Amino acid sequence: MLQTRLKRIRFIRHEGDEKWAAAVAEHEEMIFALEARDESRLSEVLGRHLGNAWERVRSAI
Image (cartoon, rainbow, N blue to C red):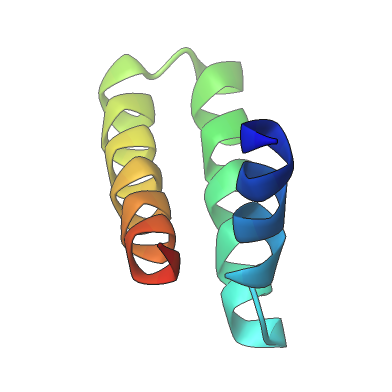
């Protein structure tokens, strides 16, 4: 039950092309940082991504 609710929140909160594009861009930044082995960049991107994700989840619950 909890997993189903989390999946719902995960995708519903990306309503709109702009929000979805932003999430995809964050994931692409993570990949680039990983490929470059740039730990400080990866840390910044992950921190921002998780902060954004938390705001989406928080507003949905």
